[in-house]
Length: 265
Image (cartoon, rainbow, N blue to C red):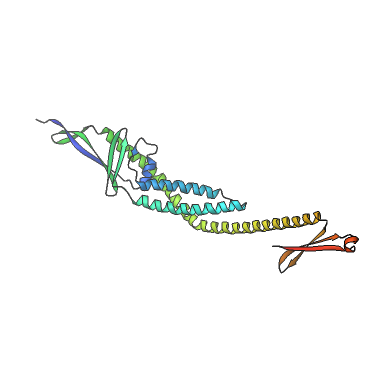
């Protein structure tokens, strides 16, 4: 007499997860949580954020003043460092895949073990048999199958977008590797020119202050003054000549005078 039986069977499905970073991105809008995100992926996410911030700061830089140029140079150097850090983080995170991935969905925990380049999820369900053969009827395992299907769809949907974004990012990083040294060299040259201009301006202001001080003191003492400029050995020299009338009763009616000179570089 043939009888129907229910027997427990293990079911499994392989999921070709090759990028944990892509998986984390895929689950951001899902009810599924990856509970053992590797530290290397956290480091990669931090490196991506730092790179994005450094790139934005660099793109907003300008050369309109000495302060701006110094900021631009610092931004370029920060972007070079962020670029290098991101490159290393990408290699480390993509090449170091954990042996087990632990998930939680609707309060239920699942584990996927790495096997032959994929991750295998295994669950138990009951199948109906008749004369030792399965009838196609099952009970239990619905939540597990739904979880596996949702995980596969989420990852597959994100994979193309993730791969395109990675290709774009790596191309941009490669272009920056060739662009940034030139930009840094330009920033240094512009900064040096600004610094020379600022130094010349400071020297000019100092010379004018000293000249005004001498003229003011001379005027207070009753001197009349004459200012002239001449070039001496490639340097601009300011000559201040002063004279004062001396009354005849004290110095036989002669004029007394002084002469001051200083260089303006």
